[in-house]
Length: 105
Image: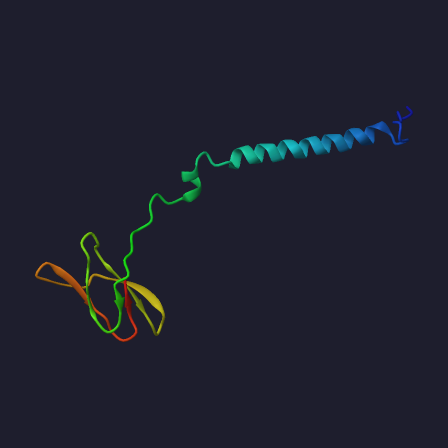
């Protein structure tokens, strides 16, 4: 059986193959984009609300935990790190006294 030729002189079945490949690729891309599309902006955020942080100061000093907060965040050196510290509570007031080169939130 002789192949049917198109106007460009190429066999017609080659155009069909290329068209099928392009159609399949387009269909797969469309399905992937529908599947991965976020339904709302909250789906993209991954976090409902960020914590509230208040900078209290740096060494030397004693800092009082403000109302509505439950812990101190202390930036320390040697080695550099951030630690959560409950502080010292006396008389209903929670305080933290910094050591050398510490910052408190």
